[in-house]
Figure 1 (cartoon, rainbow, N blue to C red):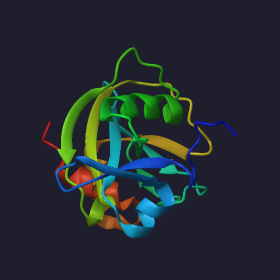
Figure 2 (cartoon, one colour):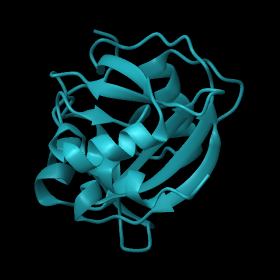
Figure 3 (cartoon, one colour):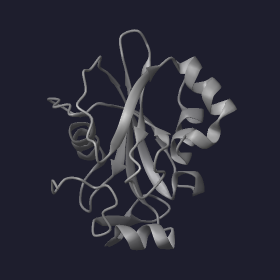
Figure 4 (cartoon, rainbow, N blue to C red):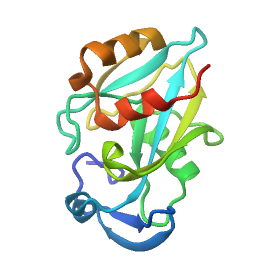
Length: 174
């Protein structure tokens, strides 16, 4: 398995952060999640020129929210990594996108129970694909209008990852 694959990896190291998103330590992924320690993540929402958003169905091999629908791509920051570098890396790992620069920061979400105690920067990218989905990370993906996503979240919230539900409800208009 590729060294960059993170599905279920318990030996990754994350920066542990305080309530102001300042690094206060470093700990293994499994410990961070088991203890509910604050840490960092990115979510990227990819929109095509028609305004549809690409959603991924998480692989059943994932240790968090397996088989649930989620952002176009998402992932934790590795210890010592910054948000922009993580977004750039996750787009490459999960969707096969080799971009010249990170996508544009769209909005920030504070660490809370709904995000699994992750501070998140959410990025917005316009890209029509095609994507090369990483099978250890993503079962499949599909394009949806924002209205379809909102309706689906209202009728079947359990089909979506908790952090995605939270993020979608807080996205800026437009």
